[in-house]
Every structure is written in structure tokens, then in C-alpha cells.
Image (cartoon, rainbow, N blue to C red; front, side, top):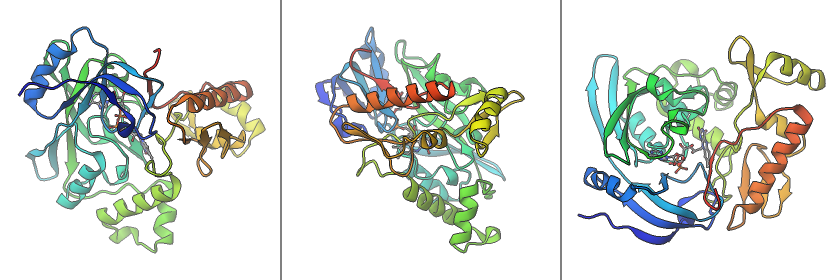
Length: 343
Ligand SMILES: Cc1cc2nc3c(=O)[nH]c(=O)nc-3n(C[C@H](O)[C@H](O)[C@H](O)COP(=O)(O)OP(=O)(O)OC[C@H]3O[C@@H](n4cnc5c(N)ncnc54)[C@H](O)[C@@H]3O)c2cc1C
């Protein structure tokens, strides 16, 4: 069947900030047969690949072709005594896949429960939560080159994963559709419980580490997240708006003269990571309203949108970055992709 291109499609149902913007062209990709037709459609066009729209800020209409990834399928491709290798199509919902994996006895993803979005977007920013990142379980990523139709398999090393970063944000940023992700999961659970919030949640739930099941860990993570983060269906948001800054030791020492309680996490011999949310909270941003945008009351890293465009939200982002720059010398980096309008 020939792929149908639609024109002037509203993107409002497809982004968790509920911004109203139009895609000049829109196509849904559901099969390998659809994928084979993409290069002819993509030639000389500006492309936006869309999964669940949960890490995207639409600054205006998208004057190009939006490819909505709806590829489906989960296949166990290999196993040995300790591991199982699972290939998942990029259009699968991430959390539905995590639930499936836990039910099948495939382990390693429990801490990544309840992250919104698609499997295909997960490698883009190397999703992470509660001490686990996608790179810890990823074997390879299959991409389709949208200009020439070639398929390529990238190993974990070739994906150049780092904190909320990968090759899909630089050299492979546009014109590459992630069609499949292959994960190497464990057949015996080894649970990662080091994160402070997990330990205290375990205690308050009266759960014993020694007998904790992967399903219980998944539910614990889902509870922590539900308490902490606003539900995008109720308060439109994209999760953390800024990355946690990585700064040199000398800068940390200067900041600790002002805030001795500032906590840092080692990155390498010269750098540490600090919590952007903590910093924004100290600078008084939590709960601040900015037109139809707002900093969330419980989490200063999350910006909530109540308008049907992103203007106030982006102005709020600029004001927060300028304030942090002026008061600390730190350049806060935005986590979601800002796209559309005059870019
Ligand atoms: C409430 C909330 C909580 C969140 N918590 C976390 C968290 O704990 N940890 C975390 O890491 N993230 C978190 N996020 C961010 C988000 O869920 C992830 O980044 C997720 O992977 C985005 O998936 P998506 O399908 O919605 O991507 P989209 O928003 O559709 O796209 C994001 C980027 O990936 C690209 N992309 C999408 N699919 C493909 C593909 N198949 N091939 C190539 N490029 C593609 C897009 O072009 C875009 O650049 C949270 C978001 C929300 C709203």
C-alpha cells in the first residue's frame, strides 16, 4: 500500500505540552513496507520524527514532514543461561514494554518504569531514572537512513551514550529513523536499590530488600514518580526541562561557600554534577507563574503549560536560564527538543 501523506495536521493530540501547531506534511509509518517508501518522500525535506511527543516543545508550526513512528513488535531474538536479547520496534510504548518485560521475567528495566514515550525515542536522550540508564541494558540500535534507504545497526559504543545524550542528538540527529532497539536483559533479577528515594520508599512500604520482587520494585518506582511528577494528562509538561549541570570542582567550591548544603555527584576527576532542580528551588523559582506557564509547585525542574502555544513557557525558560547564569555563572541546558516556528 502506498503511504498516505496528510497536510496541515494538528499536532496538539501528539505532544504532552498540548501545544497547538500544525505539521505541513504528516505520515504514519506502521510496517517495513512503509519504511521502504520513506526515502522517496523525505528527499530534500525538513524531517521531524515523532514518538509520543513527551520530550518536545513545539515553538510553532512544523514546515516539513512529520513521521509518526507506529512500528510495532517485540521479539526475543536470542538467549543463554543468564541473558535474553529482545528486539523491540520503535513505535512500541516504552512503559507498556517495561510491564511486558517484568511479566516475562526479563530484568533490568524496573527502575525505568513509567517514563512516558516510545521505545524508538529512548536511545535519543539515553533515558534514565533512579540509578539506571538505557545504555546499561542496550545491545544495539537499528536505524533507517531516510535519504538513501540504507539500514544500519549501531552498537552501544557507536551510539556514544552519555548523560541525556547520544549520537542521535548530534551526527545522527535528523534523517535517521530508529526502527528497532535491541536490549540485553537478565534472566535473574539483580535490583538496583542504591538511590536514596528507593531506600526510603522501601522502608515506608515495609518491604524487605531480601525478598523484594521485580514487580514490587516497578510498583515502588511508579508510586515515587506519581507522588513527585505531574501527570501530563492533567498538567501538560515534558518532565525535566533542564539537564543537571556538570561543573568543574572550583565552581562547586565557590557555590558551596554560598550554599554549604549543595550536594554533588562525581563525573570525572575534574567535574561534578549538581541538581538543577535544587538550584532553581534555592533561587526561588518553584511555583512561579509566567503568563500561561508555571514552574511546578513540587518540582522546580518541571514547567507546566496551560496555554495552547509555547510562548510563555519559552519566555519562562529564558528567564530561568538568565537568572541562573547571572547568579551562579552556570549555563542551564534544555533537555527537550525545541522545534517548529522560525527555527
Ligand atoms: C512526566 C514526564 C516524566 C519524564 N521522566 C523522564 C525520566 O525519568 N527520564 C528521562 O530520561 N526522560 C523522562 N521524560 C522525557 C521523555 O519521556 C523521554 O525523553 C522519552 O524517551 C521521549 O519519548 P517520546 O516518544 O515521547 O519522544 P518524542 O518527544 O516524540 O521525541 C523526542 C526526540 O526523539 C526523537 N525521536 C523520537 N522517536 C524517534 C525515532 N524512532 N527515531 C529517531 N528519533 C526519534 C524526536 O525527533 C525528538 O528529537 C519524561 C517526560 C514526562 C512528560
